[in-house]
Length: 322
Ligand SMILES: NC(=O)c1ccc[n+]([C@@H]2O[C@H](COP(=O)([O-])OP(=O)(O)OC[C@H]3O[C@@H](n4cnc5c(N)ncnc54)[C@H](OP(=O)(O)O)[C@@H]3O)[C@@H](O)[C@H]2O)c1
Image (cartoon, rainbow, N blue to C red; front, top):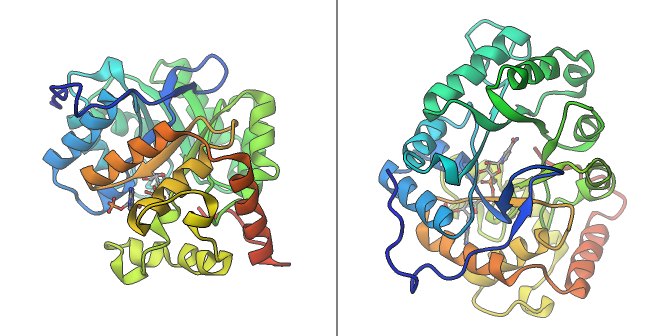
């Protein structure tokens, strides 16, 4: 079980919260992305500490997935005794509910959701997201029908989609969908054009994945494990943006200024409910809590980053990367 921090001195203030879509629960503008703790097999006691320090400060949204190797079990352990204080989101469809099944058939999704509940040790998920299925799968309707059925059975409260570009736009318009999880960061801005406005028109909750651009300012060899390759395209895009945190009004050493700039950029968009930062290190989460409290960037800095993105890609299409 996670412990509550003892003194107000090391707690700092509570971070701002926003409603997770129309009628949704209040969640911290900084959420916890639980992919790295799964893929990098972070020690469970460290995960307890990471989650505990966030929840203590009102950063109560935890984002995991059936495919994040051990992540659901670690989150389940970390929230024991504090279920009422957290909003738990998981994802289904990859891997399938059972080997040999089509990952997007109704039976597979039913099994995947039941397996997530068992791994998390809870009776009901606050939200389940289809984990980056294609546009074709969305159009076929069986996968969305299966998550909607789980909601009718009381296994999940909200239904949504995690992915980008045309598929995310299609999902945003679907009547069963009440939240989206999309990529948005300094070097990945494609979803700003149509997906976020469509989500806002329908009053959807919007969770942002990869908000720190996978720490793209680090050289790939400084990344851990699978993130060496995963972060490479963002690292290349960032070099082409040629931006400098100090010139955009965020001072400090690069190790602090870059994540602060990245997080505050994402929080500058009112359509965004929560930025899901992944981290395996308490000192990084403490820095992110500070940045979240500082809030959105000044409008001129946000505009300059958007211009730098458009200038860097020139005539190329830089799609949202899943
Ligand atoms: N298709 C999907 O559904 C999908 C895809 C991608 C992500 N997601 C979700 O979105 C979440 C966030 O995405 P992400 O984890 O890929 O990327 P991210 O949050 O953009 O970046 C995570 C990286 O940033 C580093 N970091 C965090 N805070 C830092 C700080 N203050 N200073 C320096 N480095 C810092 C972390 O390293 P340390 O461990 O060293 O802190 C980690 O390597 C995921 O965890 C997952 O929940 C979903």
